[in-house]
Amino acid sequence: MSRNQVSKRNLSLISLSLLIALAVMAIALRPRAAQADEGVPFRGTLSVQFVGTQVCAIGDTNCTTCVNNSSFYVEAQGIANTSLGPLFVEVLKCYNPAGGPQGFGTYAGTLTTTAPNGKDSVTWAYSGKNDNAGDFYTFGPFSGTLTITGGTGKFANAHGSAAFTAASGPSFTATAFPGPPSPFSMAGTAFYSVEGTVLLQNAD
Image 1 (tube, rainbow, N blue to C red):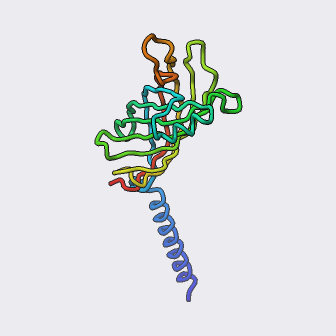
Image 2: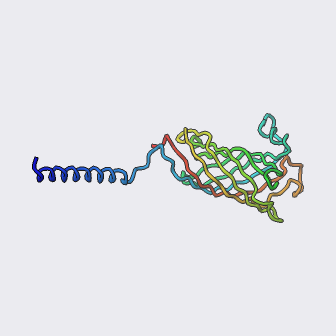
Image 3: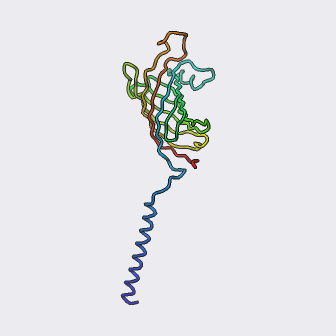
């Protein structure tokens, strides 16, 4: 084989290698369409009203277990404006007022977010803590994490987690108002900002 033929052959191989390399790079850098099984950003703001009690409804074992540990059982309900649309919110949690390394108080329970159709819902494990002791007027910040534990409807098989920062408004004790005795030890409002990632495997 002549020297010119060898050079041409080597040039052809080099050119082919460059074309293959460019093709691989083009595929790797091509923007991907979102897939149903990929995580998508989740953001939301929640506004809720809450009550806290040490008197449980008959048969409410979650409340009883909480209260028996010198804690308050808290239920909160409200509405959220989220990247998945508007959702109804229910928080069921146990508040330990002496919990945490600094004794500001901790929370553990569940958050359930439900679409207006009542069929599509996500259940989250809820863990949080008060960030400080609050001010004289009982305003106070708190924060924590949320981890998806289940879902229904189009949110079935959902996975993901989020972090929240929140603030509670003044909480009034049952003795603050005249009237018949109330089973609720405290009542007030809270506002949440939530950010995380949700994986919707059943998304269309």
